[in-house]
Image 1: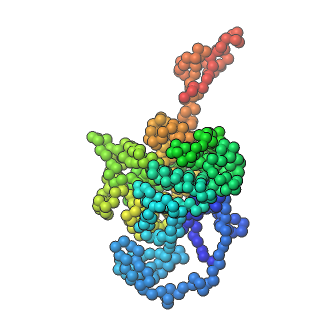
Image 2: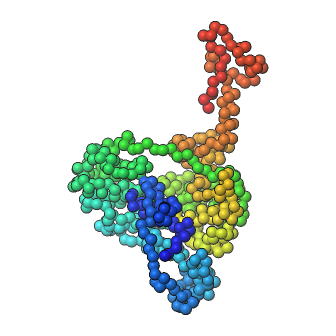
Image 3: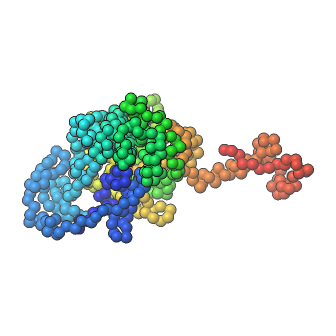
Length: 521
C-alpha cells in the first residue's frame, strides 16, 4: 500500500463531491481507518473512496542495481545536469545529489487541479489560447493580469448540464474575467451555476424563460446544503441573473432572488494568536532566515493579508519628508491602492529586503518577496533554503510552514499547554485586535485594516481581552448621574453616601433619588 504523509504532502487539492469546490480539509480518520475530509464551503464531510493495494513487484525498485546515471535531470535553475546520483533516503523518500552543483533533491510530485507538476518546478504552465467553444478555459488567455499566486487557472464547463444554459454560463464567466474578478470568486460563481444546471436538468427546464421566482424557491428547498453553502449558491446565481439582465443576454425578474432568501449568517468571533504565543514567536525570530523574519515584521505591523504580502512590489516604500509609508494594491479590488504609515524601524526592514532581492535578481524581479524550496519541518534555520523567482502561492503556504517549524523546534505552547497552532491568516486579526486593545478607537482600526464597513472590523477582526473589559467596566461603574440626567463626579459625593446610601434617600418615595446608571460608552 502507498503510504502518504497527509500533514506534509496534502495541500487541499481535492474537490468536494457535493459542491465541487477545491479545498477539502483533513479531518482525521473514521472507524474504518479511512481518511476523512470536510468542505469549508458547504460544510459536508466525506471519506477517501478506496484504499488501493499494489503488489510489491510493481513498485519495488532496486535503486542501487537498476537506477542508471542519466535517467534523471537536476531540477535546479541553470544546472539541468544529468549527473544525478542516489544519495540515501529521508522520510521514506529517495534523495538524489547532483554531482555538478551539489544540490540534493527528493523524489516528489504534487497533483494539482491544473496538471501534474513537479514540486521543484519554478515555471508556470503555458497559457492555452482562448476559444469560447472549448469546454476547458485557461483564464490567463482571457485576462493576462491574473497573478501567479493561485494554484489553478483553468475552469471546466463539461459538467454544466443543458447546452443552452452552458452558453449563458460561459458568457458570465467571460464577463467576470474581463472585469478582473478574483479567481476565487469566479470559481464560486461557476460552482453555483453547475449545481443550478443539475436542478434545471432534473426539472426538465428547456429555456431561461421558464426560470421564475417559484422555481428559485423550489431550488432552495431542493439544494440540500448548509446555510453557508446556500448563501454562496444564491450569491452566485443572483450575480448571474443581474449581469445577464443588464447586458441583455436574457429578460428576467430583477427580484427573482431576494435578500430574505439568504439564510441568517452565524457570527464568527475573531481568533487572534494568543499574546503569549506571539511573544514567544517574536522572541525567536532571529533563528529564522532573514527573509521570513522580515515577512513576519512587515506582515504583522501593517496587518496585511497573505495575498497582499505576496504581491507587495519591490518599490512599495515611499518617503515624504520624515514620514515613511508602504503603498500596495488590494487583490480583492485591483483598482484600489492602499497606503499604511510605518515607523522608521519597519522602513529599515523593508530596505533590507529590497537590498536582498536586488542582490539576487536585480531588476528582473518586481516583488519584495519570493518563493523558496528546500524547506525543513525540523530545523528553523532552514539550511537548504533556495530562493525561486516565483510569486508566493496560496498553497503551500511557505510562511506558515516556517513558523510552524519554529513553534515545534522551540516547543511554543498556548495557555492550555498544547503546542501552538499557526496560520498566516491569523496575523491580520491578531494585529487589529492588538491595536484595539491598546486603546485606539475602532474607527482608527477600521482605517488601518482598509475596511469600508465599521461592522466588518468590529465583528470579525477585533476581540476584546479580559484586561480591556475590566478596564472599561471600571469606567462604567464610575459613571454617575443625578435625577436630571447630569453627570456627577465620583469624588464629589460625600463619604457617608458610600457608607450608608439609605441615609441619602429622599422622601416621599415618588421623588427621584440619586441613582447609579451605566454610561453608554
